Each structure stands twice: as structure tokens, then as C-alpha cells.
Length: 152
Image (cartoon, rainbow, N blue to C red):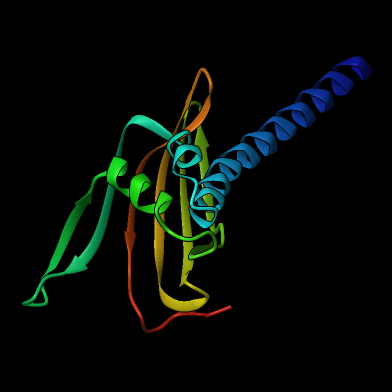
């Protein structure tokens, strides 16, 4: 019985440590993406994404109707690489992270600053997949607004 409790405790502790490691590695990929944006490093940015990554933004059209806008990740990386270093500064707070095997979701409110000035805020929603070479961002959708923001 004593050995059973020791093994059970060690197993639960090990599982908890692995879960923490997975959460940290998911955060690391997202932080790497935002560091690459801030450093205008398009090549580093591309390493954060799966081969078929999808970028979308929820916004409003001229009539005020909700629309989903698709963005080209290759064009995004190219435009980031053409910015001055420090121009694109997106600051996220990791609110929710859930992991099931090779799938992770992240819900993260953010504030975006351009050239040091507050631009907009919103919510980033990420889906990541753990491939053989680590976590990659597979899907990003966000909201963008200029009001009701908690600026840092």
C-alpha cells in the first residue's frame, strides 16, 4: 500500500509537470510570434506557423455588418519584415489555455501599439497543433476595436 501511494503521487506529480511544460511551450510559440513582429523578423515569424495556417479578423463593413476578413500569412510576414524594428508591438495576456494531446487553444486579450502609440485592442484566439518539431500556430482569428480597452 505504501509503494502504491508513492507511485500514485509520483505519477500525478509527473503529469502535472508535463502539463505545465506543454502550457509553457504553447505560450513560447505565441510570444515568439509577437517578438518576431516587434523585431520586424519575417523569417522568424514564419517558423511559428503550420504549413496551412489561417489568419482571419472579425470586423465591420461599411454598412456596419459583421464580416470575417481573410489575411494572407505570407503577405503578413512580408509586411512585418518591412516595418522598422519596434513598430509593431502587440501585448497579450494569456487568459485561457487548453490542451488536449496535439491540440491547444489560447484565448488572449491584447493591446496593439504602432510606433509606440496605442492603436487598438481586442481578443486573439489561437489554435495550435503539436507537430513532430513542436507547437505551431494553425489558426488565428481576432477582434479589433479602439474603445473599451484596458490599456497598460
